[in-house]
Amino acid sequence: MTKLHAWLAAALLGLATPLATGAAHAQGQAQEAGVPQALRGAWYAGDCGDPAAMLVLTGRAAAQIDAEAPARLLRFRELRTVSGWTLGTAVGAEAPRLLLRSAAEGLETLEPDAKLRDDRLPGDASPAIWRRCPATPPALAALHGEGVAFLAALEHLEAACATGAPGACATAIVEQGDVSGDGKLSPAELARLVRGAAWVLAAQEGATQDVLLGAVGAGTLGGLLAGRLLVESMDYDGDGRLSAAELGQDAAAFARATGTAAGQPLRTQGLTEGAGMLRALIDGLMNSR
Image 1 (cartoon, rainbow, N blue to C red):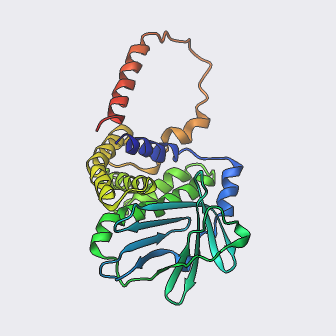
Image 2 (image 1 turned 60 degrees about the vertical axis):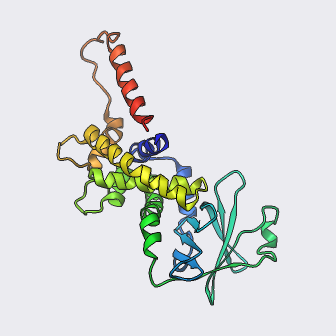
Image 3 (image 1 turned 90 degrees about the vertical axis):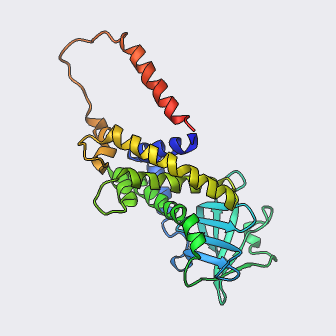
């Protein structure tokens, strides 16, 4: 639960602060093309009624869920064309790579050996074959639907934050999390984001389907609690929901908080004990299980 709360704080509060670095903006532009549109979405190995594995491609990620093997989540920092394939190089110490291309059967993928140089790709390995199915099997949709939706939403959030535009992150958070379409985030909508984050974290750590199920289940109660706490702590107009303005309240006003020369400094020693109590309360919530 600690990771979930820490992630939620980073996503909803940190992302709400504009990122005005030129490097981040340039990186976002370089990756704008992403995985070819025709290849995005869900692919399956085996029978559509009971597939052996599922591969989901988003603009800058590939998530593979196997019936028996641990999950794999690759988030691409670079995508380019190599010998008719789309080559994605993922973040991580080993910079794992994935090759993708359309085929008569549907989709072919290859994971090159780490020692194989880019100029020798695709190599001699046989590709994995994936195909589309008319519909996602209900069991897979129930377990992975929110996680896949969150993975796609996360990319939209990163793109919005990379622009550096004031309020862009807070607006994007509301747009991506607003299921009801009322322009605000309810505790249930915030809880949905936490459940999606739980799935992404578990998939990134190589969880099996059973562990993914447990992570999403744990995120259900924790997500509802985190959602309520966020609403209660940031709902300035008291309507029970969070708007983009409330999410970005102090982040947007940061540059305008210039103070005044009037008045005299107050004695702040007495505030130390209260601040310590507040910090202890926050730490307790962050570490609750």
